[in-house]
Image (cartoon, rainbow, N blue to C red):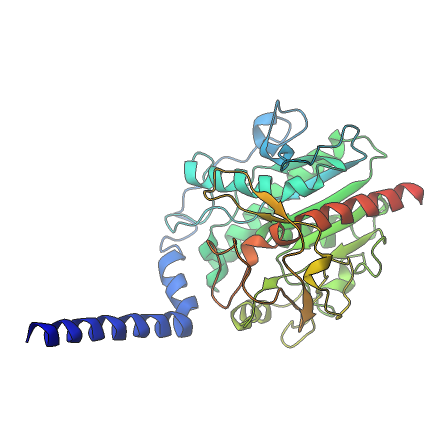
Length: 371
């Protein structure tokens, strides 16, 4: 009797686990929205005072600071002794709670994530340039899971900070310094708007070495035509854009595609059904050819905890552009902590190709100087 009861208990647990897994697979976006979209209105939401970008305290990374996480390098890699470019890096979403629409500056968990992003992502550029990463009142994660007007207000506020920070950055760097624009996720979204509204068609565009708009979709017909820069057509092209979104197999990017299709592009045209830019970071172009793992010069595998520095592992991860998304093959070892629904390796877009992105930036800066 006890054995039979035990088996029924085990069977019930298994059924519940399977049901939960199926529910998460089918309704993961709805579940995330319920958990993360703020219930308070934007008007009633707390908002930090606007940062003063003339002050060092308004920057998470800045060459004037005694040190910052963007200067970190893994063993065997050095920061540039004589940086040739100035890098404006906009961090991805770090605020994940639903009590307000925009990020506070004194949240320890949020600031820890920003430090991690700078160490794992922005650091790829410290071999060629000084890195400037502004603090900004970024929109909370839930703003990307809803069509509420409050979400647009939060993103507009965040963009306003980024635009003001960019003005301060341009005023502070030498007037002839080559510029790299880089970001991830929400940061890339703001960079694309910055390109469209503040850089395209102006003399400043001639100073852009490249734009690494990683982790955010760029429609080839509804966004790219008004950005003022083309997609990078060769590994050493300059004045061009790179973008990719990483998925392991079996890839299920439908949730991301839904977000892409929901809003019109920067041209005003619909994004729905349009082709997306996918740069293969192992070769620096949008070629659809499969690039084997042997070509990967080094992925930055995270440490056992977020507080540990990662280590470089070469030859482990290949990449292929498929349908506007970057397939990395089977789920790679060492990158399992923050995988999003659909085998989405969004969090690791930079880590997966760390050495190759670093080499890509070095190659383009050298080509820009030669030009």
